Structure formats: C-alpha cells, structure tokens
Image (tube, rainbow, N blue to C red):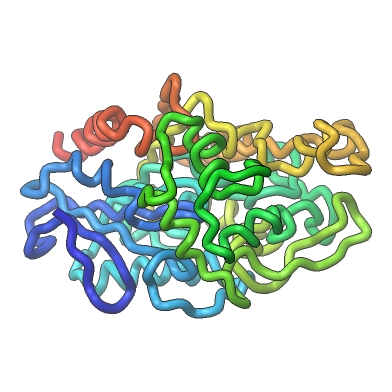
Amino acid sequence: MFTTFSGPHYLRTNTTEAAGKTPLLFVHGNTSTGAWWAPLMRCFDPQRYFCVAPDLNGFGQTKFRPIGARTGVRDWARDLTDLLDRLGIARAHVVASSLGGIVGWQLLAAHSARLLSVVQIAPGSPYGFGGTQGAEGTPNFPDFAGSGAGMSNPALIARIRAGDRSKQPPVVTSPAWVLQQYVLRNRMELDEAHPLLDGMFSLRLEDGGFPGDVLPSPNWPGYAPGERGIVNSISPKQLRGLAEAVLQAREPVPLLWLRGAEDAIVSDRSGSDPAVLGALGLIPGFPGEADLPPQPMLLQTRALLDARAANGTPYRESVLSGLGHCPYLEEPQRVHAEISGWLADFRA
C-alpha cells in the first residue's frame, strides 16, 4: 500500500496521483518517523484520500541537513509546503502530533493559505516544550532554563548511539522500554525487531541533530537551550511570537484537537517536565512548585484555541478516554473515526 520515493523520504498511499482525491499530510513527532502513521493511513480509502507522511529533517531516511534551532521549526514547515508543491497539492488537511504539532502551529502561522484544516493530536504547546508557566507561556527564567536539549537523558542517547534495542537494566535508559512503557503505556509489546523502534534508531545524532547542544545556566535545573539541534528547536526560546502569529494568520483554518485522556507526555503535569521530575526528587535542588510550577501544556493550547475562537475561528476538542500520547497507534480505527467525522464537515 505504501511507496517510497527519492529525495526527501516519505510514504504515500499507493495511488498514482493526488488529483481528484482529498489530500492528507501527516506530520510525525519526536523520536519517530512518517512510518508511525502507517496504521492510521491504512484506514483511509485510497480511492478517496491521498495520504502522505514525510520524515522530517533529522529523522528517518530524509537526507540530513544540520538544524539551526532558531529556524528549525520554520524550516520543517517550509519543507512540508515544498513537498506539497512537488506533489502538485495546493491545499491539504494536516494531521500532526507532538513535535509535529508544533510544526502544525507554524504551518497555521505562516502557511495558512495552504491548509484546508488542521488535526492536532497531542500537539506540543504553542509556547514550546519546557521552561514556561501560566496560560500565556511566561518563561521561568530569561535564558529559558529547563528547556532544550538538556531535557534529554544522556544515558538513553548513549544506548541509541550504541544500537542497543534491548530492555536490559537499567530499563529507564532503554529506548525500547521507554517507548513501550512511557510513550505507548504498555499497549503494545515491542521486541528488539519491532519497526516502531526504527524511529529512535534512525535519529541523526551528529552535530545539529538529536538532541542538540546544551548551554550551562545559573538557573535551575542548570542548563539552557543551545543553538543547534532538534530539541532546542522546540524550546520556548526559539518559538517566541509563534502563538501571536497563529492568532494573526491570514486564513481562518478550522482545527480539531484530539488528545488521549491518559497522555503522560503532553499534559499539565508532563512526565518529561523538569518541574515535575524535580517535585518527585528526581532532579536535585528543585526550588518548589510555588516558584516553578509544571508547564500547563493543555492549558496553554486551550488558551490559544479559545483566543482563535474569540476571533471567529472555532475549534473542536475531543478527549479519547483510555488512550495516551499516540492514540493513532493504540487504536487507529478510533482515531480514523474521529478524523473522518471531521472531514465529513468539508463534504457537507
């Protein structure tokens, strides 16, 4: 059903052309690839839909270009519009998730004329990942300490670099264990050959790739985002003004917000948030939640969407009970039903 092509790597439904079909552009999250969308893409009738899922730069099989954090998200968004041009697609429905959801905010901000609608599945906050508080994404510190590449576990990265696909102790540094237990909530059993692991092990770990450079900081937890690499690109330091740009977008693009009720990664108490880990005693020296509350990721997203609605662009929020960060992998048919209902509004 899927075909790969030369150039930027992507999957598409096995149809000869996009003409006459509804185009769906899928944007993957961190430590994954376009192939993660395959179970959901298979749910869409290829006679009616043209589905395409690229590997973002730094992930999968796309030819790597070192990523400058200041422009990383903008560059990913531009790569996607270039791909639409290559495929002869003027406008598309975008389905994005996690880090891909941050790229989705950038597409809304800078390329709204290319979008029919956006489906955000557990999107990263429009204020970035880590280092902020409050509904409007107020930085915890002027240097945005607590965000960027320093959030990544160096022992986990070392096992990725070594190609270690096992679940040998310590399990918290095992890529396979982290993916199975934390991301997928043990809903899928991942043996060492499972293709979902390929996303982690195809990360570009060289300079300008994953996670990026780390700067020391006098502020807790002791690091600030650097200027290169994937995780630094989604730091609030590099996304300043993004939420405001979404509100000022030229086109009133409708949006569906899907999220799993049990998502532990994008939440108001994310298990990846240094403030949450500090409160648990896992990062020493935590000054306390009165000074450094957890980043309210859902609150920040809702505040932006409510502001868009006040400007005349309503949205729909659907919370999927029993599902986590990757509902499109946990129950693709259920996610397909949600998106199909959304797309039906455009055929009415």
